[in-house]
Image 1 (tube, rainbow, N blue to C red):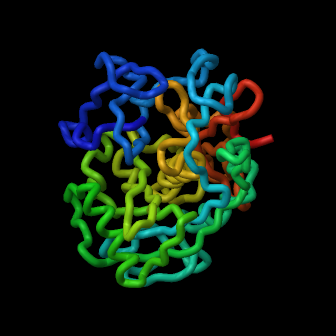
Image 2: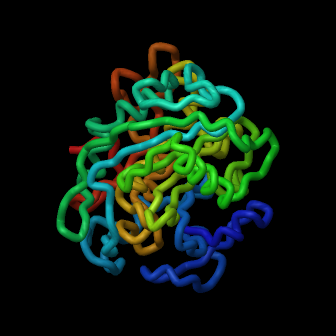
Image 3: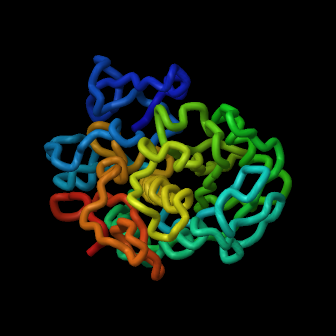
Length: 328
């Protein structure tokens, strides 16, 4: 869902509207659509995300996809996806993760979040994104590379703080300017915060995470905002037990998967989305398909990299479309 950023700050209330494929706001009151914001796209909390898997699919406008229920609008996609993690906190956020002030390669991130990012590429789950393509007909590759992390300990937001989106962007820029981060046009910079921080200003009430892009020195920077989702276990997590005995990280990888696959197929918010403005992961948000019980009694639905996870399904742009756990 795309939102006018100001609406995220008004008591956490969503102002909804129906629209054509151009996504011009019309009559308020339709919970399936939120007002457009040109450079942000949010993941709605549980209970607010619309059920879209059975919507009428033909006639949505745009081009490409057609009867799959999602359409191509001409913008770029990440053919190969790189990710960088920014852990913005005064202490280690996730068990085993980087110490504040450190930086390094993805291979050096010992957290469960780091493990998931290293394992995502090449999985049958991420391969769902290979059904999407750019204007040249080049398909997304089943590739995710966790290239770098920065455990940022400058201007750290305290628990209880409400952090503006401008401040999040400024923190990413400070990483580039200080040399703690290397800019790459195919990289998604994912900003994590510690417990109790209202990252972006509408966390827990209006969204659980979001992604967007901004310009820096003539470069198009792709970023996602990844608050500490287990702060809101009912709204921003769906766990029944913890598959990896780490509730905070197990909750986070679900929204992390959502934002990573949406950025891959709609990096500048002008590529793949449906007639309501919903990107691929929106169409399957908070749905998990076939689940099983792990050895520790938790519920999971995927095994990626030898570990069990509970991560939402993703929309396949093939056949008549639909939510899948793996492709083909």
